[in-house]
Image (cartoon, rainbow, N blue to C red):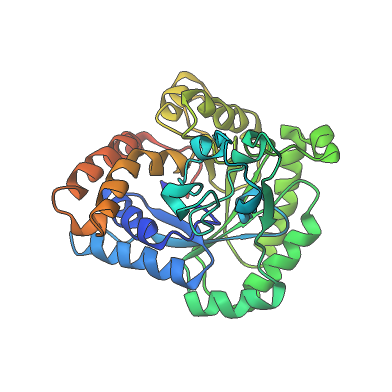
Length: 351
């Protein structure tokens, strides 16, 4: 099980709190932005949970081999926002990154924005733009060497095998021994994003599987062990239970075609994902045998958002509030424990 902070999320206090609570709840991996301050915040949360008996999870850092919705920030000029605008962008932002509550003015707080894109079509005036946040090639090896993660996730897209190989070479140049190299790829665009014409015409499970085989050759050639993260509906798990279908359908169609290595569900995963998996029979003949794990992002944050806000109102960490964090932990366990309790009969693909 993996908790996803968000590849663009730099809300340090929330990351520290969420890392601590979800580590104590039992997740195996924390996936955060490749940023020194973010990694330090996650490690503080991990240390807090370890002091309370939790085993240490992997720390995974996310990178991209090109433009990707996970690596962008929303932006607009507050001076152009009409005073009488009802500001639907504020209502749809799951990170609470827009508006006076976040910034004291009608603007975007970039630390909180993690690029879900829901505000882009919501703006009635078309004022919101997106700004990509991609690490330059020369920055990757020294950054990874300094942060020493346990694992790396590379976000990629169909048709970017060459860019993937280049980013993989930068990861190798860091010299960091990795437990896994996760490859994240899917078919559907993130909320608010329109697919490119070439991607829309080519994006089939069969083509995705063929792309994963190309990535497999590159990853194994680099001496690394792959993990395939199937991104069903990026950054949408908190939208509603129906979003869970995309990840499960993608697993169902790709599992028989995928290269060796564990398959992990992500993108739209929420409380309904396990229920949907257990209704299906995969090629191995057992329910949910095609899945080796699951990753939760938006829904994991939304569950704990009330506790984060209450601690923030008091000017304190959630982890320092003994009247709050046990309640937050109980909520986190409603998401995590159903998966952990089934691990004994779990994945058909070895880790």
